[in-house]
Image 1 (cartoon, helix red, strand yellow):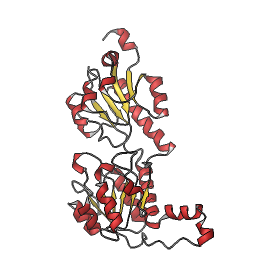
Image 2 (image 1 turned 90 degrees about the vertical axis):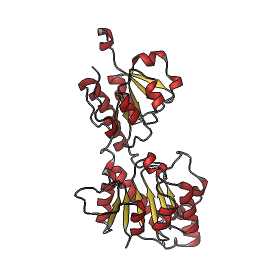
Image 3 (image 1 turned 90 degrees about the horizontal axis):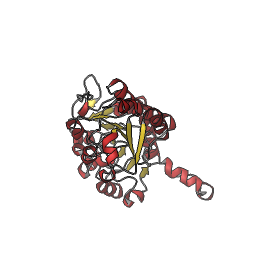
Image 4 (image 1 turned 45 degrees about the vertical axis):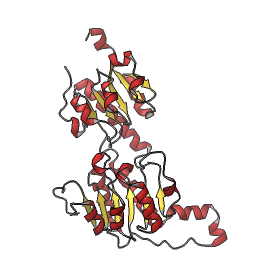
Length: 327
């Protein structure tokens, strides 16, 4: 590398739309290169020669990584990074970072709010008021469901799962969980299988990450095990749910209700879920406050700054924790 190249700002590729605060920080510290989407066919010869980092919401596959021979780091905006091929990145010696911790409390707050909204039908009660039915028809009906007496199971006891559990424990609700393995030092009841957890509870909250290991893990069998008083809440990844089975379970009374913030093909939501009167649906807003998104943006860019200034990441994902900066 020449002295002139060393003195020039590092080129960071930003595919598609990105957080405004993050863009402002990139523009101050680096040379931002914009591309319409993460598509190898859009990569130019200049990008191949100069791009050393990517800042994105995800969607970086092996082909995109291979299209950028100078690539050193992918800074993912968000704690979930299942749409980044981190294993391929590791093989290529490319660091991948994400933004854990800074969104934990916000997502946990949203989860509890979504659960209450689902159980007490607040979405429907508000519509009753706004439509004028309170005036014309009288009080909204009594909600069939309540949090009282419920038993909560959490699928995915990571940072967010633990924050959700602690909130619901304060509501006086017993907590159980299913992970790939038991969490040391945690007193909540552990179930070695997701079906075993569903059979033991009547409220299942999924905070599980996406990926092949969890693809459609919440299926007809799991929903049936949850039972007719069951409530399912998903704040993790839409890919973890068989949405057709969920819609059928809601329609048939196999379970009582569902609250969903994530979907398999966002922003496209299956019509059967849109039509379900016993479903509370949100447009993936778990961490969507200005406060939290700014903190996520800062951590995303702080990873880039640290990597190129100090040659170390702040929050590497497990797959690339051993990747070393190139000389």
